[in-house]
Image 1 (spheres, rainbow, N blue to C red):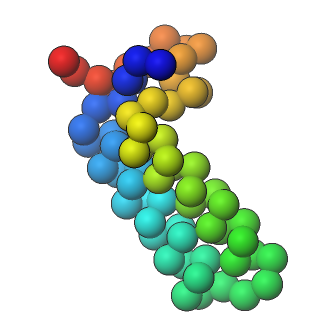
Image 2 (image 1 turned 90 degrees about the horizontal axis):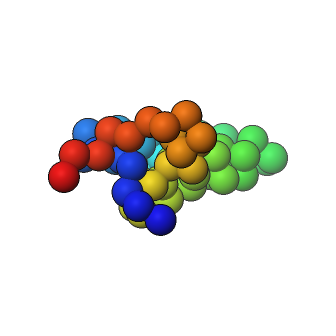
Length: 65
């Protein structure tokens, strides 16, 4: 799995993921809480590994060596 996400892309995704997780735990109740947390984990995980599976079929890469 080669990296296809650049630094800015990873930072923005990490911030969005953290914000969604925090919103889920601090601002929501019930099922909405877990939906926000799970949805927030996706961009956070892709930011940590530097690979977005949705970029691959479209040939997108923001990674610069």
